[in-house]
Length: 212
Image 1: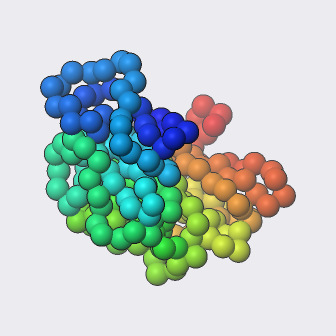
Image 2: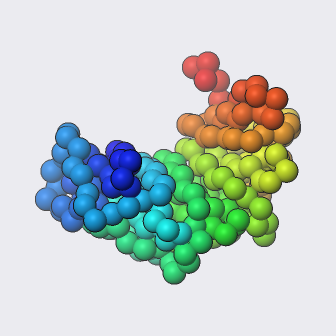
Image 3: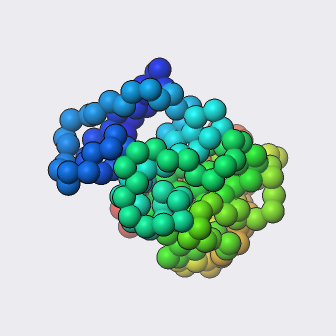
């Protein structure tokens, strides 16, 4: 787990190799270890890796269990390492073992794609766009589903795990499908999705075995 401080630095705790400070001793750290010399604008933790943005540059680190550090390889990435060469990243979000982010308006995902949560074009090589649109402004990914709103208050979701995507059916889809309604914000959990509608109501869909 990690948290971003007001000055842009971060503190992380948990498995040593996943702290992003060059620790590889296999120990677990139950107290936050603060980084130095960093200034992140956005930061997210997934199940196995951490990704962050500094002035449009995306970097990731962690155990990298499922290519989720975006390097095109498996295995530990002990310090923040740039993903690709683009300097136009604006937002990033982490799921179980999948990451998604917005790069110059393009919504791109990487990592595990077991049930289509990384989109139809997923590749182990690194981030790939979920479609050709460039008006995305937010990306979110959960355990089985990816979603994002586009300008115009339209929200779209994808995933082939057979869970509802908000389009009024229970069918999965490898490609983004529009959720019914108009939304300005959206987030995914473990098999469910909640979104803030333009009328300020909160709407959710997906698994509901615990009332989520």
